[in-house]
Length: 445
Ligand SMILES: Cc1ncc(COP(=O)(O)O)c(C=O)c1O
Image: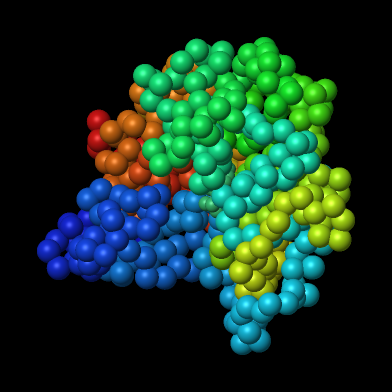
């Protein structure tokens, strides 16, 4: 089926529909019927059968263009032949050993060869683990207990990184000194060890860092945080964080789990800033579970069991050769030219969206960079997490929009106009996407 044809969602909603039956079974054995909240969709998710290139076929046999790419982790799209072939070869040779494999050395060399601020790296199984390890490393390196992170920024599941990742207005507190809000299930004491910073408020950040400088081990920052709607840092903002952390002996941790897809040399390379530690995940696993923490030899020395070991780092499946093989093959495909082409397509779709909103007189702003985009349906100034309130994340239009886009043959987040691209895409898919989004908006309004 072509992506321009309309697929009625009636089939998926009908009694006996394959996704419906799977969801009913799932709900009996998994709370909420899923094992990952990010796949939830009302009334229930569409189950995937297979993927190829930039398209996914669902269990009903419908094919759609995938603008989510497993939340940015599939930069080559689905089942890239070179990755599939390499993985098949590797699987046949055994999948897990209580021994290191040559592949992990190669991937470590590849990343250290591309990213100037990564002299050494260690692998783990998720971005959450990578962030946890970076925070532990910073604490061990500095001998200080606290970290600072930004209100609204998502960094995975570690208790300290989760603080204030999506607080409600009642909990916000002072705009220049946001409250530290823990998740239910996290001890309240965790809040005392997390300083919450306001995005794009340099003076407030300077003061908070100064105020906590004796206790702060690290400032954790994603240069284009999806949780803050990919609102770009103001000129000089990241530089200020680098200066203030360096002044007080605080480590700067770059969270590149998502944004490593911005550039061949890393996201902070684009910003011209050298962090002390950086976390990786998603694309470096080529479609398999992965994480990585890297940085300067000095900062990474806390993991060195041949020296003054400070942070123990085990993990049964760390650097498993299947993941690492897929990651290696993927990163090899992502040459500087491949990044340039993909980022050019990113600019193309962001411009297409801007044109659409302008031509239809719909107030909206398009954020994002590289191969990612977020469109916010407002003309109000966007500066930080708080400025997104009321139209982002919680806007009821997004579920309807997601359903309409599914009917038109596109997979988009049900939590906003957020998407990312993969290398099999061409301008044709992007034009069709923008056109379908225009139709979806006009039908919904
Ligand atoms: C910036 C950032 N950090 C950390 C994570 C956590 O990674 P994972 O889902 O692999 O645990 C994510 C996941 O989306 C992320 O976007």
